[in-house]
Length: 331
Ligand code: AOF
Ligand code: ZN
Image 1: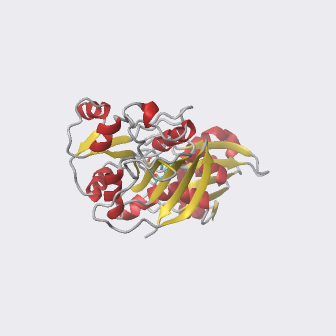
Image 2: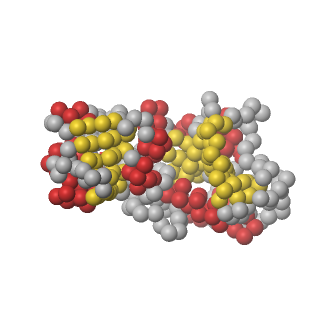
Image 3: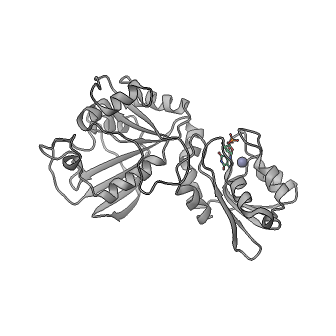
């Protein structure tokens, strides 16, 4: 299951569909096929893994992060493909709460041994944003920050449009941000950040992640004119989305309508503060660079002097010369 989750976790997210990975094992436990879901409308992970295993699937075990679907959506039901392949055992981690769910019971009725590996942490983490958006009707929000040890996000006196002056964190951290961007449905920022930094906010991981899903939707919130900026130009051609200043919940409602289940917030203090005050940050990824700036701008400023963001489930990993903190916002 770890392997199946790792497959789906290492590729571009196929939004609006869930990230799913599958591994097929022969009776001796050797891997004979693997697959992941590449893009909406493309084959499901189970079908990709069955194609890789071919005839050897007869009598084999399929391990898959999400319960196999039984519906006829953009592609056919995986349950039928699994039955036709001669697979004799299916292990899955997360039950499918949508109308596509119920495949496990169907397979069991048809004589396949079905086991729920519940709860498998790796699969649950992978599918959490998707499950969250189904439950709450809004995307899961990850707030990304790149800051000095003392929490400044801008260097004193820096011309932030010059990347050499703007960057605080290491190239390794910045690469990790590109991988993150490739795995979300949308990136949200503010007109203030666009005017200060002129960012592109595209996903450019090196090497590129496998997968063929569309690039994340870039969303800029605010009223100020973006003339002369790269994102301003992208909004004018319809490649990015501009939204008037509005409550964060409305931004997320627009994203939900577009099928986004995971949004990355990459912005300045004020938009971060608005999301935090509205209780709309679910998780943070905070890169800490080995420098103290006592700079002019903190990562977050509360709109009305609200309290604090309490964090849980810290995971701290070194990355380049920086530290990366991943944590959940506690409610
Ligand atoms: C996926 N990829 O690997 C699996 C999915 O519109 P469709 O036919 O692609 O169906 C999408 C639904 O199928 C999805 O919401 C989920 O409930 C189920 N399983 N979906 O996109 C996969 N296994
Ligand atoms: Zn399916």
